[in-house]
Length: 211
Image 1 (cartoon, rainbow, N blue to C red):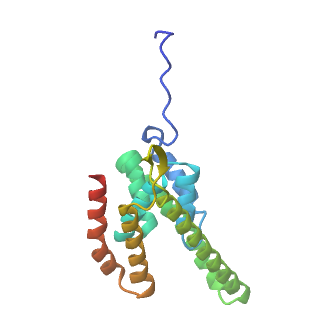
Image 2: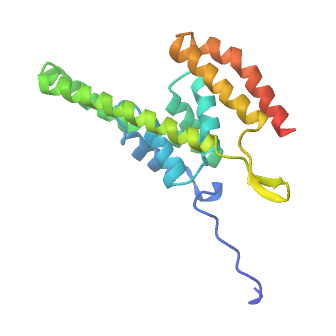
Image 3: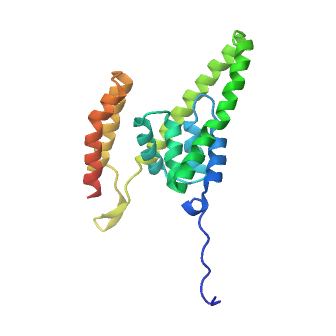
């Protein structure tokens, strides 16, 4: 090896070469055991903010696909992320990490619930946990929204660099989000119907933007 040649850099921790099945299993096991009643807020923090395996837009795209697929959203997400980094073994490892630990916990809680389910303190504790879970989901939604709707890259406007925000595609994205919220959250329409109605417009918008 020529000493004058620069050393070959090692793969970054978030690169596919550095993430194998075992690492996926341990990461998703820790993720699954960190939540109670849902781990989506912890998933965003662990995968995007801490480990930086995905950026905010990649996470949002995979999450959207996971939500329209059959089955639990977080399990679908773990399979897609595992397959992305380590192929079929990675998908199996990520899914196993997501379900193995919680399955044991659920069995233990089921046994405990038979003996303590009628205790008022336990009922109040579960109600408090539900309130905390709602707050975590809301905080995650706000974080994802901030990252998705940041200004576009800077461009030359009148000889000066300015960050553009109110572009045509951006306005259309906000409108689609608003329509989805109104359809599902306010009008209580079926999720499948709302997605089927808005998806063609969203796909067409993405295609036109890329072109």
